[in-house]
Image (cartoon, rainbow, N blue to C red; front, side, top):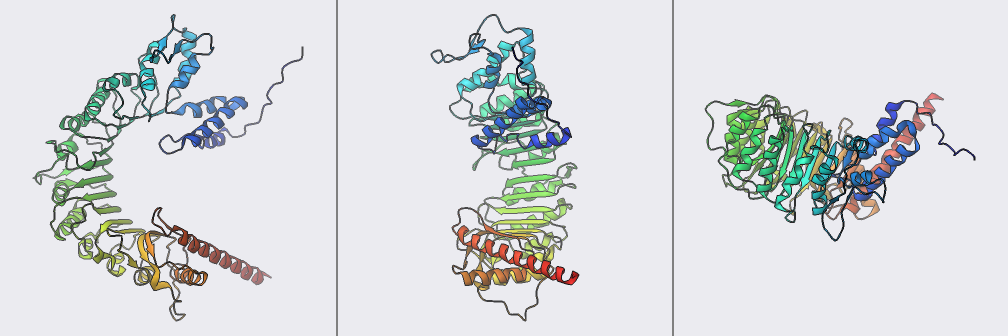
Length: 518
């Protein structure tokens, strides 16, 4: 009998390089499509099967991120004639066979379970949810995933309320990140408390769903939290839980997203609280509550702040007060986003000038009235010499910035690298005079149009606009429009013109350089 052919051994070379390659085949469960996830899994499986030297690494990649634990069932049932666990359609529940699997088989299954670090249960069907305690019973264990680091649960109204009992086997002391999307605050309350009773102390919690007083208070028991994000919807109920009380408990916070309609602040604290570790803050509330918070708290390490102002028709002076408070409480701020979600109060250049002592690198202004849109950029960019990104969104679909009036001074007097604006290009539809000096120092490389109009429809008009843009911004590489705004096709022609112009310039420089060398 001839020997079976063996798989030839392929020299691996540097294993670290292979590990980096395998990272490209790790599924991103929250962003990849089903087809992408399937393709990545098939690739990791092929590597594990065909390259003995990479088998363990391939299996690590294959099992690292999971959205269901049903593959463990297939691993347990190694033979179709010897199924230890099954789900007969007529019974509607998982059925275990006696005797339970042997210790050797449990150890083999453990090697798979131990590889799972990320579990994202985005389809919590009854079959999936009831599987978790069934597996724990079948394997005679308390913790299904001993090395789990990230757990994400997506509850929908169809998931039975008692299903929280099934979550317990998923909880591991190694869990560092917990995301919960729930349709009921009761479910959320139970699960957050369940984390504590199982001695799980995550450093990151993300919650999206309804709020309640008890739920707000339950988060404070997780004192190791470094990142806490809340999304309570458009109209969250109020709570007597103080935001200052929250800060006082969670001193390790580095990142926080919170709504002051839930975590209230009724007055300016007599003694300001210092949060030395907080670096990223995203906060929603009325201008008055936002000011109270900023006056009651010091953020010496804060580098990114997003303020979402809602309700209260206090006029433009509310933004003036907010900007004063921002500059005083967060002296190291580098990235600022100011959003008026109710489109009531006007922000002015004078209010923004209160922030001139900050060394901002990026500024985002959303839903701002038209008076700012028509302001010359001289009133904005000189405030922050190191500003690299500027984003301004008009609250009205009819509001646009005159590209000719705004972009030309912007090119002369700023170090911006990226701008995001609603632009009207009609002022740039004629050639700029040759007497106008070329702007060689502008570092701007990207223009993003939140909306646009006045984009040429002819080849000649497109070429003129491209020439004018490159005369202002010689380093421009990309111009595009956000999806769903109607002019994306026309800006594709502009992008093509920019690409061709840059290629011609490179060719010219190459020929010039070569001729000089000759």
